[in-house]
Amino acid sequence: IHESAVRPGLGAVSPASPVSTAFAETFGGEPEGVWCAPGRVNVIGEHTDYNDGFVLPMALPHGVRVAARRASGALVRVRSLQEPGADVSVRLGAGPREVTGWPAYVAGVVWSLREAGHDVGGLELVVDGDVPAGAGLSSSAALECAVASALNDLFALGMERADLALSAQRAENDFVGMPCGVMDQMASIACQEGHLLFLDTRSMATEHVPFDPSAHGRTLLVIDTRAPHRLVDGEYARRRAACEAAVAALGVRALRDIAVEDLPSVLSRMDSEEQRRRVRHVVTENARVTEVVARLREGDLDGTGPALTASHVSLRDDYEVTVGELDTAVEAALGAGALGARMTGGGFGGCVVSLVPDDRVDAVLDAVRTAFAAEGYAEPRAFAATPSAGAHRVR
Ligand code: GAF
Image 1 (cartoon, rainbow, N blue to C red):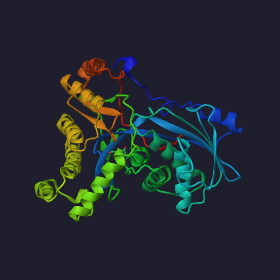
Image 2: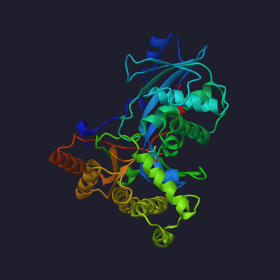
Image 3: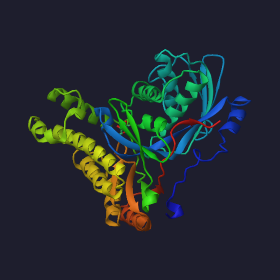
Image 4: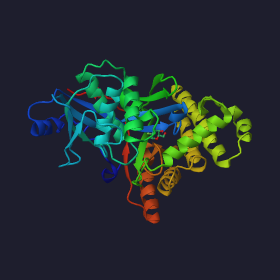
């Protein structure tokens, strides 16, 4: 990969993180600990998590670090190394929508844990991260999960990983106001190095599926289109509402309960073409996740390519969450030899993930760059993703 095209992992992989130094400068003395939680890239299973469905994300080497210490008083004081000069103090009792911007993800986790009855008190925190913000790689979930992990240890809450992820999701749903599913938080909390996380979002059952493309001479390339990705602007909520309306109309518990074989008869019972498309995406996407997992269990990595591309087509035509940059990147990657490619995350901008033979990586990057220049799009960035560890204490 050309160096200019690579966004390397910084905070999550560098042991000498500046958060402790910054902590001493800001608050004096040492933090009680440093915690790290990663961003994620979803390999397949998009817009399925709020339909009780299946997802298959992996943690990135990029992440958020939090240096933290308990403090007397009823304040959460927080500084971000990405926002110099914007130190924030939030009242412990601050409620939903009282805090805006990045501090809402911190205050939201504190709120969510206290709402669940946990005895979380005053805090001093410094955060540092290198998940590309706005790229759909879950920088917000990484921040939430790093904070949740810190609080779990500092206040001896004894919470399991799935409960921490659900608390972080609640922070985002009810405090920040973004009606996301639980995929991003579970990926950040529960992923393991060298594995994809196969998650059933209904039962919260997990399987860690070994994933090592380099052993097959393949690269999992993440292409950041740099098309600004905004999920709080209502489109995501509209998709979720459409699924809920379909569930009510069909009298099923969730779209997850519709088998792909029953799709023709189910669709024929619906009167809105738009709703038919939304349902078809979710039902076929769940089937694609289980197909990809089955192929990976058999060691058939290349066989997953067509399902990745079919996922993109479904997200483009049925779910209608792609934008020109995402479609252009996918087409260019496939044209230059990628075995499969798809948008990843919520859509409306953000990244494409593609499975590429190692000897085609340069060609894929060149093709994407050329296609972007021809369309007048911003210069894309790319990096090779390696499945990394979920949230953990660094020291
Ligand atoms: C966003 C959400 F936060 C996730 O919960 C998920 O729904 C995803 O979009 C789409 O698969 O990342």
